[in-house]
Length: 203
Image 1 (cartoon, one colour):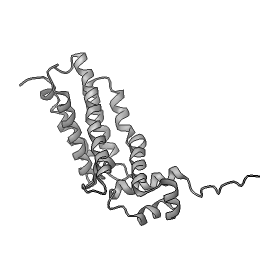
Image 2 (cartoon, one colour):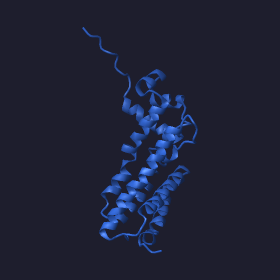
Image 3 (tube, helix red, strand yellow):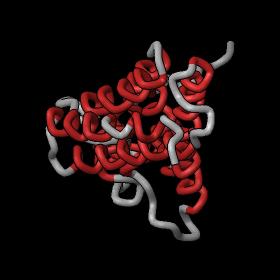
């Protein structure tokens, strides 16, 4: 009769969610193994057995953030009826998501950005790529506005998308510094005031 392996004594997904919040709050470098173990409620051997390494755990935490905790923002963007509506949803949903009381403030992908060194260059490059992908994804939504006549065909969509993504990244820093939702919404409205000059295609 085969001997069954010893079952894990913890919920892997719950442990990952707790690790994600540690990385979100502290960043990759500042999050110590002791911080992670304490938050996850597991021992060091269990952490390594389940996730492999701190780097692998961080990668899974980022993926979870993008697909779960950060998903509301892009769901709002994708469901918008117009290009302007997509950008408005992007910024206004950001103002709410970045100031939730039950989560660390701001954006994990923006705030856990690493200072480059030989040990973490691969992780840093992955975060840079994710941030660049945000610009590309928003530019795709803006392309719908060109097709509908909402945006002039001569407009540099990537530049416009980069502007609004940069605003969002600034909102992340403001949120981490303690700005409330209303303050972020004011920033969003100020940025949206640039919509017409940015999309009219005038030199």
